Image (cartoon, rainbow, N blue to C red):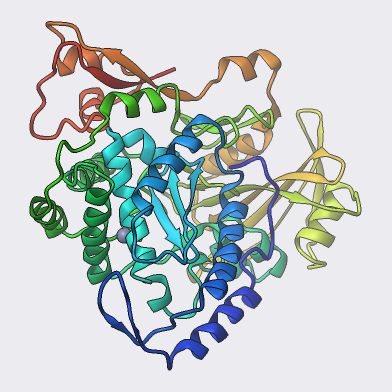
Length: 493
Ligand SMILES: [Zn+2]
């Protein structure tokens, strides 16, 4: 969850409508794409129109992920990006590169030359050439105009309506539920992926980078995805990750390798140490601005609060909410709400959140010294009857932290008590707590003679699968030999 308040109506119908119109106008056009040599019947937008759409989509990306990262890491990504984008077939596009402050491994592009990589992707890459490969692939999507070949739904869209809101039949809840504001980026087709790999290898080679780096990074991604599947409860790899936007088929690594073998680059640039120095100290996982999940507790040190979820509940942190699911089917959305009228918590629930829906059993409560209120009514989860319980806790006048709980009818009374505990666990963090709870970071270690995967992995500040996590983080796939004097990444406090 980011330190920004819900932006309701972010993914407005209006924006999609505009894209739709532009798409339709362009249908009749047909021209040869200079990058792919293909005749394209789809909307070949004039560059200024493409730039305008790009700016609109870019604003959506920023509104969803919060501020882009700035400083040396962002400058570095822009420098590498500028190198691979220098010699494309489309000089009408101004390429711009951004680092999203997200632990999810992802990269994507929107029309107009906007290219994004996540902090999670930088954590995973091992060389400048691999980063260049990712950026070159995204540039390929833009030069091949893959975005323009899509339908008019918009490039960046919100996931479907909130489960709880729809279930509760309460428009206010539906609007506010964090599940509805997740960012979803449409995936490319298999053919488009191969085309972008092909173009990416071309741009890598033109910039003097090792063209094999693309395949190397795809292998790391594949390994990370498999590892994530084993690390239950870890949110990287969930939601809009790299593979959801860029589907990877088994043959993609092989084909990327074959394409790379067809181009020759004299003394290819790899820049492993330079890249690792750039990401040394970069946050791994959630940042202070996003809040941390530690066991069944959530800590937001930037905003200064914490709460505890029932045992066995699984939390997923997203930019706008913390979404929790319990094996018994209960769904809990934690987010923030604002109210200009400065009403008390109970009036806020009734008049603002529920938009004047009548709730008979609303009551005022006090949560660790803060004014709060709660109300419950009957709704459904996926067609089954459920209790919808809402809790609003006043953080500052006009600002509320909120739990929305959709609880199946058959849960135990012990579990109901746990939910009550969750409500009353919400509290402010002390200054010393804020200091002691810190994000994890990437640190570099130099291997000494006699070091092994086991000895280096032992320094990793992770709870499980240390060696596997170390191997994937360092691209040690197949060959796991540790070389003395070489830099390796570890995850550390
Ligand atoms: Zn792609």
